Image 1 (spheres, rainbow, N blue to C red):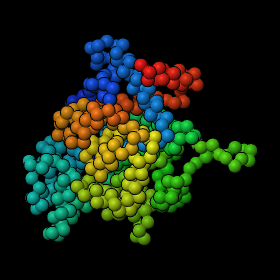
Image 2: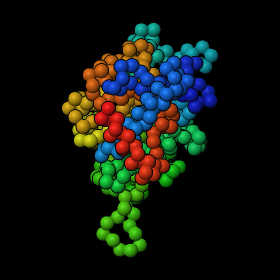
Image 3: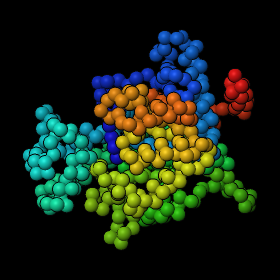
Image 4: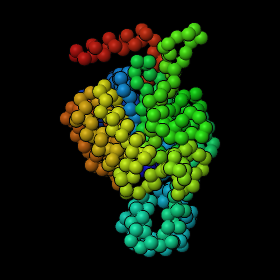
Length: 419
């Protein structure tokens, strides 16, 4: 689970001194970033209102596409939710001193043993754990193994304990996001939510509003993983005998690509839901450079296959939020699908999208520049510079629209298309 600092304007204690930029959008019909907030424009409120209305109309049309796919990264768990960043995990795993920031003596010995140079390679827990794994293959060392076991336990704890409160305020953005994305028309497929996060934010938010995530686990205790459950659905049958049921609102598919803090592998090889699994049997792809290879063992192989299949479906909208495009095994299929699937719309939401598309910042990469080039080339790609909370607030509520409002929007969209 690749994490990065993600300041959120809704967080009482800012993660970073740098505040997020005002929401803005960049798409194929504009030659520059357009603000969605009146306070961030010099062209007058009328232009901003036009951009905002166009964007909301496109969002509404996107939610009404036959297939809706979301890829949620670690950015959705930061900010008000309180999840750990990569910097937090580094400090916790190395037991760094709060005042000096220096690692513990055990961590220093491990850094020296595996030849990890912080000044050159940075404070990156993924790179360090990868170095430890590679070193252990060539020079088995109990000290290094002990450190890795403790680090994995720390990651499990850090990605679990921050939700101990689980208040509605803490998960407000998740609740709003799920409420508006998962309530779709009966004829449309269920929302497919893929996430790299280990935590239970989406599950907890769903429970708060009586939504039902289908996670691939059985509905009876003990709950075991079986991919056939992704093909099940929940319908409501009327009191009068009927052969056809009505799909229950708020049901969505949740695919945890890198595992979950409550997944455990039993001695018999089954995967079950369990509270506080030990790090050695927890079904997680821990932060490491070998995530691509680990994604092709079960249950991750099954989840990846469904991810790839979802990107190939016609009439599909893909919303990427809080994902840094640093995991190539997830980024490349999206970029390939843009060219291979002519019926795909891509909406990418990131609080520093404007900076990343210009190559600024240490966490920028080639994928962001490719995304901007795709927009320039006329592909159906929308880049949104906004936090997860900001984006959740602008998602239109389908149930709030009357039949008349929907008709007026449709007529306006047709009229604009003829301009």
